[in-house]
Length: 295
Length: 335
Image (tube, rainbow over all chains, first blue to last red; front, side, top):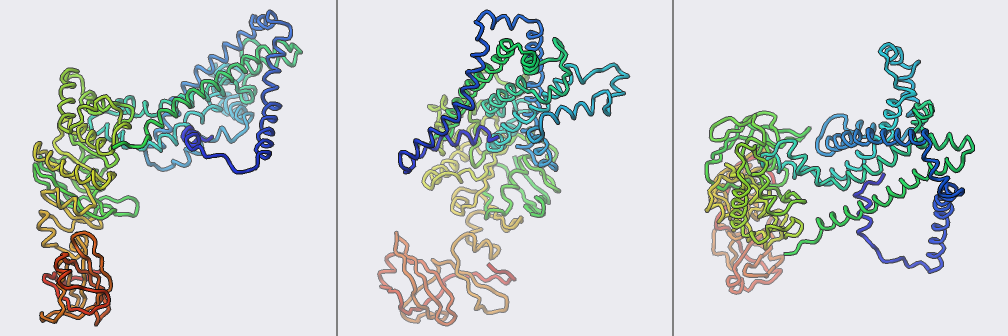
């Protein structure tokens, strides 16, 4: 992940076009566009085409199914827990890494990246191994009548794990670039830690934070692999939207499957839209800050 | 308020930033901490502010031990080299910050805050920019806002870390004179860090010269310039000619370029022959580079334009030079 800072810096530096002949430029552009069309645009259109094949009525009917509604509810619930949890964790981790020097800092940074590095299936299996009936904590959990695997807590845990890095990764480079002088100023002026965070740090990172939240949310709602391992696929109970789509598809209910899938596609489009607005706002905020000084 | 530091030592890993430093800053003065980069002056300032913790030693405010007091409770004003203004707040809100974060019981009312902030902005001559964001100001204006913000909480001490370091030469000069006048008006004990000799000598009541984590000399600008306590201070404060050919072993003589006298005839007992190697005649002062014929050692001299015309020097000529004022240090020291 490149981080909002580096992405924005590319925007600022617009170089004049290359001196390559026109046909080279056209060929490269055409190749890229063709690839995008085949790999991204056509599938996206196909989702909606399939969903609406039997008309709008059939499309809407798919959402009347109690299992579909349960899946939507569970997905929203999972995201509603995972995103705030990772916002708190991400801000705390980024704050610690960017503003303080301590031993084991590199270990922490590596750990934050871990969920990106391992396959989501492995992420799910980790939880089964720890909390499952045959897992390390299985007997103890059984004794105390706590179920985590094949239940909602397991799904939330797996989602939190998979979406762990988004907020922290977005904020670390931003906070490192901003340094600690503003916070030091605030403290010398008599502000306490909370006032400093709320009045100085948070306003400075708000666009980066929002960006991280959007990506985190998109992943929390769309995660399949890790959730699939811990879910148990109990209809109406432990199916999220992606899992529900798979079940419908395997049962040849194509219209219903694509109708529910279109929700995720819409979420993706919405995410991209908001992401662009946030990038644009962050860009104007950043360029206002770095505008050349006038005497 | 007077400040005193006693036996302060601070290390960053294997690097020693301050080595058993003790110094007392009397109340109401403007003191310049002068030294090359890495000499420990900024670290000393940050330890006084409470932004850095010393490994050992203590900090006293008005004779009272403040070593354990947090930066929040020390009531100092701190001005950073790169201003450190709150970038998302207007100039007004920046200056008002210190007043607004006070506990409710002692916080002034919004009306009082407004009055205080506008008065301070008037003091730094920026009241017309109250609604701007820091990004819309020039460097010099930003630094004045930073100063107003630091003064808003009525600090007992004002600490400035290279306050003019990020500004261009002309603004720098204006702003340091302005700081001097401001200090004469408000008389708060002020310490400022600089590596600029001219700046330190022009503005300060007292100069503390630092080198290699230690204090080399403390004195008025006149004292440190005219009577440098060590070869380092002599060398750091201006261009230097160094003569090893000295009367005693281990002794080194120093002389400033403007104390070198050039004549065409050998009319002084100590004069030595030297060859003119370069002439730089720009501005009112002419810089002459010479080479001692006996040892080949370079010598630098400065003449007034008038004296230069009288002598009618040319490159490659041989002349006689002697120094009007040399200082001899008997120390094992090399520059």
